[in-house]
Image (cartoon, rainbow, N blue to C red; front, side, top):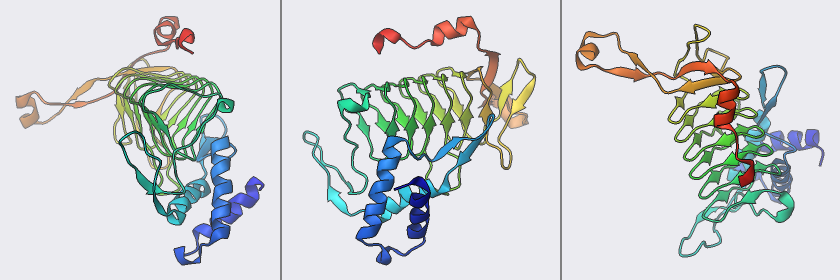
Length: 280
């Protein structure tokens, strides 16, 4: 099924009530899910310099899968049991996919795309609609949320949390562009874009409401109406704090979390953030 035809069919089915969805709808959904897993379609895609386009119809297709799904008992994992919609089981990878999934409790949900050369350390979770580019490392306890877009040769360190989004269907997912480094215990949420080759030091939290202070460029990066928070290409971001201008807060010595760009990537940073080719 060609992508334009698939899109038209998904959009038509998404507008129907659940009672009108039959076996033809399931066949269309299964073709859509296969297109997601092959990387043929994705929830968001690059559009020009520094731009991204949200494919709302793809999110509508994912939500259609939940509407079509029937609750079933999933395959057991040792003594554990799982119960979920039959349309979104765990994805069954094979050697032909070229993805290295290290033993120890990782799960990749159906409808997620992992490119050849991806390495997933245990335990990690990649949710439906996610897109993970070639050579990326997803480390232990990392989460790649629904529809998140992770570029090529990205390093998601241990316990990094990349937020997901399904609704509203037009909302931009979290995007981590090529060759970025996301440190341990980082959190990136609410449609934030981490630019190419940016570095997030351990513990940085980025949300749509958090301003990011750029010391080298003497400016502040914020989300604005119609424009997401974007970390510039090559920025090195560390956790910081900002004094609260309030007598009560000053008396108690309170401050707010404030991510700070302390420099832009240089050869020294590249060496510190380099991926270990030997582990691949």
